[in-house]
Image (cartoon, rainbow, N blue to C red; front, side):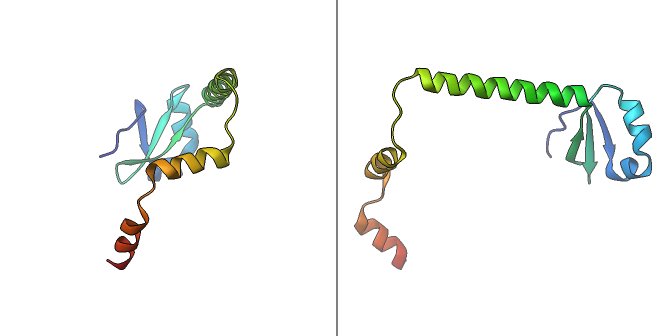
Length: 100
């Protein structure tokens, strides 16, 4: 069973029946929307969603800055060529796998 990542949950049927009541009862808490007792979606108050986006953007900016500060860039073609040389199956093994 999937983990429910909210302290409040509601079935899709309940949400369809009375969305305003579900939102009012939730207050500022997230709500897991369940379909056959499995999370199908999460309802978040606008300020929580905005804070999540702000955090993701800040983390992304930090990761980009770390990448820039780590040194010169490597061309994608060079990187893929190195990875193929290092990890590609030998040609004879690939031919055997295709015929199998």
